[in-house]
Image (cartoon, rainbow, N blue to C red; front, side, top):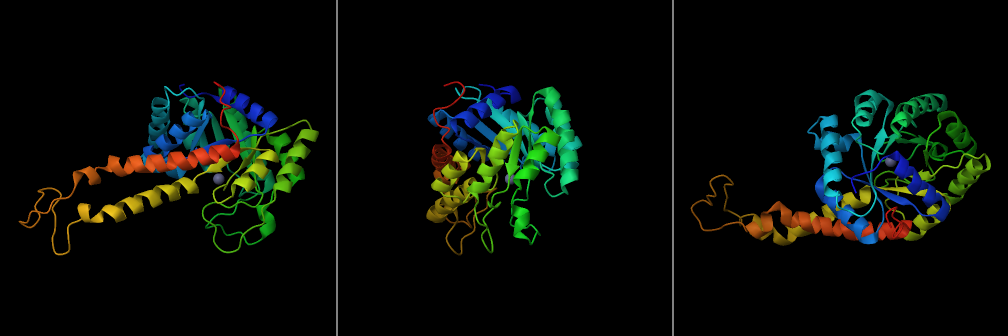
Length: 332
Ligand SMILES: [Zn+2]
């Protein structure tokens, strides 16, 4: 399927809320991760939700975010064009200063199914204001909006109180009512990146309390879990059972990518790099007059790339199984 808009994505989330499963939202910035994740979703008959951050699109566009977003979104559309699953694109962690430069053109050009506005670093009233503005901007295009309440601990954040890392259920209700967001990213003790220093206590009970508070007030919303890399299968299942319908994965793929590449190059180093004392010129292929040559069967980037795709496919299939979205595609 060519990728789909917010209306179809809202259907997927409604089903996820009713049947207690989660969509895995996979971050990517280049083709190997995307193709690995896509293969896993096709194999598992799970709808594909990929997402890009500002950092990812800047990387893909060589410093130009909109060029990078167009390139990545069209790559998804083309690569997943034949897939018999729903395919969706989310803009992940757009801060208020990126709304005009990034969200507006993405909506106008139909490049996304949903957007996340992350104003969680602002005071509550300002977060409400910034999030509501994006809801008003996106809904006429049929694009869903994810807001965030509570700060998710990152590798380089500067917040010292642990309380700031947990979403308050009463505030969550007020936030949803005031902003009209379609999805709510909550903070229940997960962390962005590989955690450093002390670990936060994971609070599935808090996810459940937020879910119950929203349902009781007749504004049920799919909850979103950021920083889900590093959690066990049991922890993911418990959080999905508690109302999480979108599980973000980024760091796991990054590590699997690097692990696969490091192993490959470590194992094949002698066939790619010349022995000590010998130099090899990549333009003239001169090896100082000697006969040493690198092995093209190993240095062709598609060789390590295929191994990376396979490794990501395997880990993505595991994550889909944990989230329970296998066999539940809207085209199933
Ligand atoms: Zn996040």
